[in-house]
Image (cartoon, rainbow, N blue to C red; front, side, top):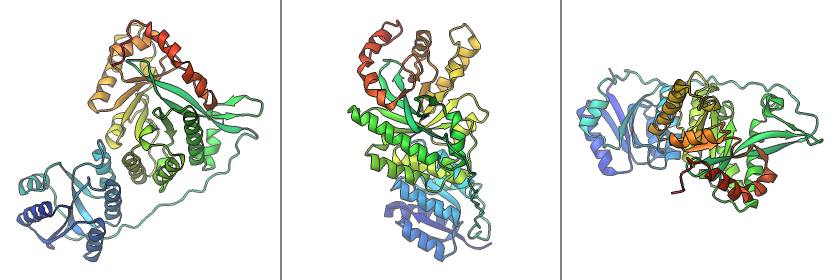
Length: 407
């Protein structure tokens, strides 16, 4: 077997020295230490890769993600020991992203790479005698099928309010796509979305909706309200999707922290490597990520473990008839809320249509809600009127006995 090799990428000279000493005791004889991504890549390429890489994910996380992706893509390391987390809740996604590209992944948490910690982590790590070398790409572009949109009309952003359950105060809107025809009638997504999907115009639709929604809020001086947008699985499988989002947000002059992207729980991921990289980049940018329609698909728990979600949107069917006395339905709802809390996710109940449902959600301490009780989807041009009427609607909701006063 060839001598074991390792490279340590740490900013701190003390941390590099600690790791190098520990690796030497573990039998690694070809050791290198560097302090920057660029030097690390040069060293890895020059020596044809290493058996083990040790690095800190917390320093310049976007650049570190690009570095780790390059290492995985070019197969420059068989295993990687990562310390820290790029952003809260992103470790599982990063680990899965690297594993599906053939790397063994180990997490130090916030610990130093001491002999004891590395010996425990690497107890079952058996590097191959030969380093694998660069992987051959096999991506293929699919030709977009031709499709036509409705003959006339325009895309319009419709916004539906989302509220804090404890106070019924509006904190943001979900932005929905509608197609307004010349006669004033409005088409729902199922009438035009397939055409946009087949013609490769989903991103164009997203960025137009973002522009309309941001403009509507800016016109009202609403600088704190948040916006959420639906994503198709194929969108996050595109190489430059996260970069396109970043450019759009910069052009619209809106903070990424005010934006959440909703990914349907039941939609399968396309190109998992690119999809994971894109959602990680969106999270590192500051955007939120919600699992939509939670509870209606077959891969819920697996998706929760794979992607760095910040929010969980409960499917409306979990709330339907919850006050009809069905104990099984209430148990399912209560445990879905508990799961969200245990994972540190904001939980949003969809389909709230009456005061009884609101009272139940308050008793269960759900975070947020959305539904006709608070407002139907409305054209972006109507947001001003809606926000001006918010105090009166709040007074009516406060008459519901279970409403708790704002903290």
